[in-house]
Length: 640
Image (cartoon, rainbow, N blue to C red; front, side, top):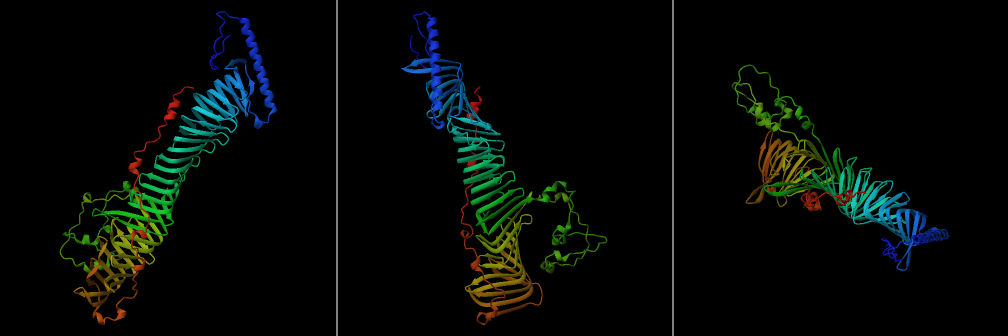
């Protein structure tokens, strides 16, 4: 009788074309006897060794055994319902080749069971000395109470309960789909570890990363390396992070970046609670809102999405950028705390429910109504003018005597342009030690507030503004903007304008209130009400020669390039004295309350903000592709 060609493919015996039935029966009985002897040896040696020293495999059940010789080595083949055990791991198959007391190969319907983890495959090579089960097949499945891993190549350490898959694997668990080229499964910890082309997807997010892990019990995924995350509200990226799905809570760190339709956010670390729709940012925070042309910096920020708010602390600052005459210009502001609020505009919500258009003359300019040239016959009702709503100085120039006849005023409402209100109102608050720097304007105060509803900014507690050689201060400052520049500023209570004229000479304007009108962020007209006073130095051939002191209840000052051009008086009495410079009394050279506060003035934007803005990543991230899950697609095509 010839030897078999290979243990996996036993050859047929040759008897010179004659069949010796009795010989075959004797060989079969001999093989079964040897198999039973091997079984007894396995059991005897197993019971004689401590658990942690057992290297042999225990046979639990087999229907039949065939013993053969291959290259001088005795090999036993087990058939039918084969069951083997090692390290408390139960292994079963349809047939197995036993090479030694600790090594075998199993074929067809291979199943490995250990501590709630079950492994299925077509082929198994088991090395008891290393406690290593190498499972292969058209489809290899590893399942436990929480997840199922599908692959074609998996090595499982039965002692440590650790599985290693390679050449691609995919997991579908609790609505999470995960795949990678290789990874590990730690059965005791219920932990999958992935590496190389890791993709994760659930109903909310798509994630691509270099490596990561996933705990099937806690439903928490961790990702490392270059990571990209897509969700319905935008895009995120980082180099380290984790996702707690039950809490819908994210953490991103190491170059964390978040992108939405309106904003781009950078930080060293981002925590985001999707259920509460709020987040916390730490370290080198930068928030760029393109809709408001605003960049916010800081080292700590907390934001909510409903309502839309953000509070920035630890060296916070903001940069509001504009483009004027094709030249970029940016206003930088810092404070101890910056607070941003965006809320729905009730006027926008109600715009579709308005009644037919009517003209509310109370909202129209009084002077514009007076300028209508009309004729009218009949009787007029008394006209009552609320002078509290009209600028006091405007009354002084209005001719209130009317002659002739007036006709009814008719307005074609169809030609009126009805402005559409903004959908939201944006508010900005800055608390304590507020400083602002712009190329042509600087400011300081303790607190600041701005609302887009009326485009009005308010400065509180020793507010002061500088424009070139000009300083303006008051107890409170309100200013109106058109987003690009200041249009008007109200300096309320103890208003004071100081303009450096030459050397140690400073022109001064003082009053209870000053209403200043701006053009290109320069004051060109100022109305002073309530105890108006001025100190004005006159020059001859660029040399200061005289000083003028004026007083009146109200006055108007015209300026050009921050120099006084003309003064108009609107009430009597008026006191105006001019002194030669050498005769000007020292105590009259400065008005009461004079304070030149240049030491508080920011000299550059770097005093306000030391951070440099990040370049936008929108164009870059638009080229990124979401995970396609090729491994999962390939394995899904395999029939079990």
